[in-house]
Image (cartoon, rainbow, N blue to C red):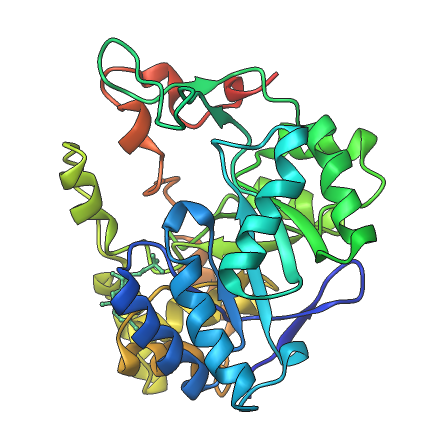
Length: 327
Ligand code: A2P
């Protein structure tokens, strides 16, 4: 059965959730149905993924039919980078709640530490090269005050952050009255981010790993955005395959088990019923210390989801996921 991570406010979050980025409405409806059927109760979404309405339709069906109780679900969504100023917080969560057909979410995250400039009509403001432009002046502390109000108002049980680095987390902690419950970051064997993970854990902030399988689907997404990157496939790493064979498990299950063994929550994305079941079925085996050591040794600081698709890696190397996004 699925195990839970206890957050710093006592809320319990299932160690495995379903990630929902890069799926059409039709795919996601089928996937959420299959996920709930398989036993998933933790769903990670965001307005940016464009599928909250589709997810809301499935949730409503399940809740109305009494197949699941609201309190059994752990629904996560996020304040998008196009609207993460203080005055955006309440209207934006209310829009998500309306789309999800829920009265509260279990966890609401600031999606990125930076904002993106938009035009008055809401479209992205592009620079002369046609690239999106991050706003470097985003004030997290002011936004966080409004995030804290959501908890008081009962619109979010917990609040957290995503894609924040150590410096950004530290800055937020200086003024936060409610500590972030989680920081959702890219985390897998090739990008372990030990310093950030240890820092957050020491501060009582749980880590959620996105792209825990190395975001195998991102290549197509990058290609569509005109970016070609030669990315490795974590499922094919010989050491991972060897460990999988020793346990009679799949490489994906080993990658996920390694993450949750360190107390980190993981949100693998799949729209395939068989793989969804596979990814949840990781609570019946344990890696040996020697195997964990081998997996730790794989770290190579390789970021798959580097946001290159909006700022262009070659043309703006200085924007590569660094701290200068925000003051
Ligand atoms: P699919 O949706 O067809 O299953 P991440 O969560 O790291 O972003 O990885 C998601 C990608 O990995 C998707 O392309 C997904 O494809 C694929 N994937 C998900 N689960 C598995 C699995 N158990 N084995 C192999 N590939 C998987």
